[in-house]
Length: 308
Image (cartoon, rainbow, N blue to C red):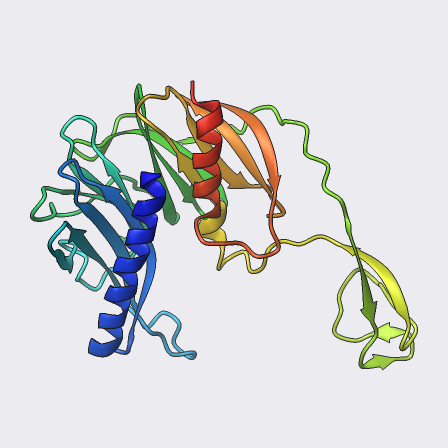
């Protein structure tokens, strides 16, 4: 399938780009890649490049957006216009504007006080200067774009825990409505998920207290095996946050699929979104190891079954 081949090609491109960065500047790291197939068949990829930060200065590294255009004979690389300034740029996403057929990028960019959602359009040879789509207090991060039959929508996280959406004009980079909270609709019956029985052996015990374990007063006799039921959250919430938030859409579907975590980040909620109206269609238990792009892939898979 083409989208899987595109992802494989993008990973290959980024491995090569990352290797070039390592050779040229060992202080750089590559993050948050996105790609889209252009109308002429070439593949546009955009990613975040960060300076490595020192442990004692976590805010000391800058970031910018790099891009490549890969055709049958060559790959062209460059920097997205305007992102090579001191402002931090992160989490880019790409879409094709259905009006012009041109690619657009949306990402989180620091405006001097907060992170806001920025926009730029790719003409095929260069990028327009970026401008902001969102304003006001609080950080706006992790943009997602849905381009459905009746229009395009921007989804993003505001203030760290609010999921917002707004209709967006991709041709000129403006919101055509005020941002609103994503209504998560009535809940579907959760899938039954079996608890996971494990045995934990007490180590470094003092009396009957299990040192280094915080579980609301659990204690065990030294060197005793006990059955304990645990649930898995797949690891660090901050590191994997982008993987738990995604959207899928097609221009032949009136709806989009939006995927977001439940409050405890133990399940993914799968929502069908149609012009601001949402309906929960499923809940998916998280795997023990969360792969990059899990929510986006989940959204794409559900869209195949729930496109309307």
